[in-house]
Image (cartoon, rainbow, N blue to C red; front, side):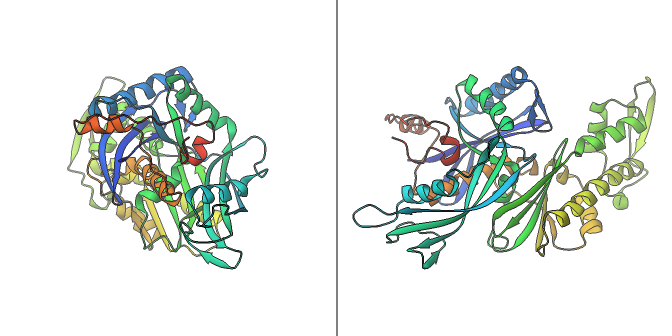
Length: 414
């Protein structure tokens, strides 16, 4: 079975969707869509009817490329009011040969959350930090090892249930099964995961349209996160206010004329626009870049302070992502604020080489990693549908799961 996964990042500015096939740890992009958001404010649902229309449009764009109906998708949710819990669980290996299977790993992880989740909160991820075989041997991945008992230590991420339920209900009305839910931070991390960062403590900063998310990872485990209610839209507002232009024109100026740092900006480079008063005005690059730089310095300094609030551990790396990080000369302002251990995220996959796709791409990779740990094969398409992509026809039905599907993502279909 081909491993084909659909991921969707539901942002306030736009909804990004990617359908990708995982082949030998490589991510092959099959379809991509970006649709302007409606019914979303700072990542939270404000109007279900508007959101449903946009979700449907986003799905259709990818379906038109693939020629197949998409009925299963992994999604991101914002990390407002996120809480974290360290827990432990264990299970007895009951099969005759006492070889640990994927289902045993899932049972141990399920045991770690049994009667542990506070009311009003919903689990969005259960990340194993270590496994123990027969209480005395610690291993990183126990799959296919022999044991009588398997123990696991986990970090459980939770957010308010109301934030999850509102989004899930929109997909339910479209007949779409949500196979997994992750915070955007997990997507950012897995989009950039490498041997250079997986054993260290570091931070991710995602500058979105309305918010900036700061997250701490310790050896690949999300341990803390905070959402700052400031983002790229604040830059647009500044430009709109100062030059008395529309928000649309302000954004266009930011993206097509402005630089993230004024050092390389030129006063001789300018653009003519019509302001709200009907006047034709000339805006030069240097003055525009000063405005942009001032707001970016505020955002990054707030993020820097938040990192110090979120952890007392030494930070070995800081990775900045989100669409704003694609601005020309963004690395110059990063150097001003952080001095060292900081870099801009870089996505290598053809078709999504823009940091606005980092969370969406990453949740596909994250879901794939969970499949491997549990020794599970999965595709959003049936065998018949997969073979349609290559001109063949053979049918296999994949059953749907209940709410546990979003926790363990169709790992053990009946």
